[in-house]
Length: 273
Ligand code: ATR
Image (cartoon, rainbow, N blue to C red; front, side, top):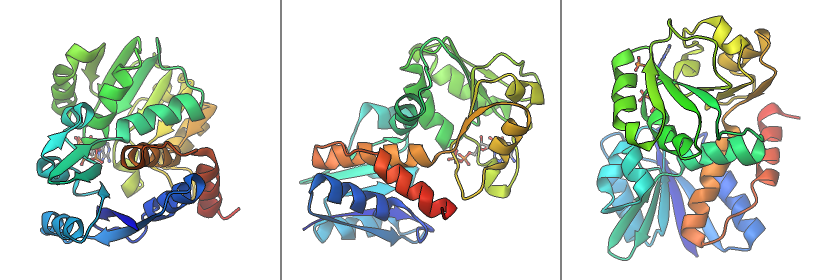
C-alpha cells in the first residue's frame, strides 16, 4: 500500500492522519498515512529513511517547513515564493517540494466562506512564515489592496518589497492602521500564547470579516475580540487546514477530495458536539 506521513515536532495532536484517511476512504484510494515526530536536528534523516522504506510523499509542519524547502531538489513556483515547503512528493530519485498553505487559505475563504477577494481591501497581520505563504496566493486573487502589518515593522516592509511585483501590497505598523479593511487575517502566532496583535480596535470594528489562521475548541482571542467589536463574520483556520490537505492529496493522488464532510466531522470532534 502507498504510504505517506506528516513530519513535525511535536506531532501527536496532528489532525492530518485523520484528514487523509478520510480523503482516502472518500475517493477509494488505498493508502496509509501516519504521523512521524522527527527530532529537531533529525528531520532530513527521518524523511530520507521514510523514503528509503518506500514512502511516496509527506506533509511537513512546524518547525520543519524551511528545512523541507532546502531538502527538495525540485520546487513548485508557489513553494519558491513561500521559501517553505509543506508537501513533499518522492518522484523516483527526485524530491519535489510544494506549498499548499496559501492555496488552502484562499480556497477556504472563497469556496467555503464566500468571501470575495477580488477588489477587496485585505489586512494581513504578521510577517513570519504563515504570512509569507499567504501573500502570493492572496495577491493572485486581485485584491484592491493588501497591507501587511507586523509588530516588527521592518519584517513587513521586507515582505511588501519582495512581493511588490505580484500586486498591490504595502507594509504598516500596527499602531497607525486605519479602519479601512474589508477582511482582516491574523497570521501571527500571538494566539498560541493567548495573546492578541496590538491593532487599533476600530480596524476590527470596521471590518466585514475576521479570519484567524489558528483554530481551537474555543474561539481564538483574536476572533473573540472581533466579535465583541461587532465584526459579524468570523472564521478560524480549521478550513484552511483541510483545504491545504486536499491540495496535497491532489498532488499525490491526482484527485481532489471533497472537503466539506471532513471539515464538518473535524469541527464536531473539536467542539464535542
Ligand atoms: P509563523 O511561521 O507561524 O508565521 P514566525 O515566523 O515565528 O511563525 O512568525 C510569527 C509572527 O507572529 C511574526 O510576525 C511575529 O511578529 P514579529 O515579527 O514582530 O516577531 C508575530 N507575533 C508573535 N507573537 C506576537 C504577539 N504577541 N503580538 C503580535 N505579533 C506576534
